[in-house]
Length: 184
Image 1 (cartoon, rainbow, N blue to C red):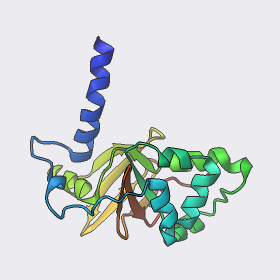
Image 2 (image 1 turned 180 degrees about the vertical axis):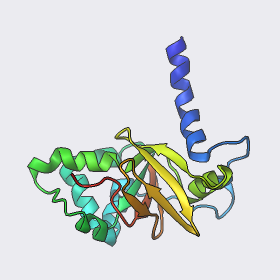
Image 3 (image 1 turned 90 degrees about the horizontal axis):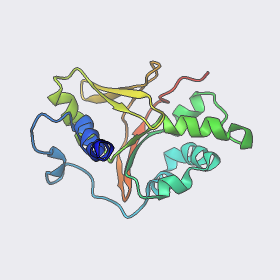
């Protein structure tokens, strides 16, 4: 019984982490607060975005297209082509399948988290930043630098939320201008 109660708290913990709940109502429900949800899945939305071609190739190489076509929800912090190209990591080919999957898990958090949610949580937290756990069990720290949302990976890699987010049927794609794990 105790184990069942623990699992029942997981969605509540995800929502509180994303919103840093302080007893306030969810601001993401306000009209115009987030883009309209698409009927596209995360995999299709990433594949359709011209500046995320390299990420789409990494997803295919890692064999995670089915996951991003599935139920979700997930939020993908999606490095743009220039960011992935600048990382110097060649993630193509069968030999790089595990590295591709590891990179992707470091850029995915559970839940559908919009930019409005992130900004509201940062502001409710006093502007000092908030943290979210990735599917790779790492921490991403979000803060603001003026009007820009900055995300820092656990190893110090830094990126900024850029471009237009896409709300898909099974999550959210948040374009970023960097890679959230440093190449080893």
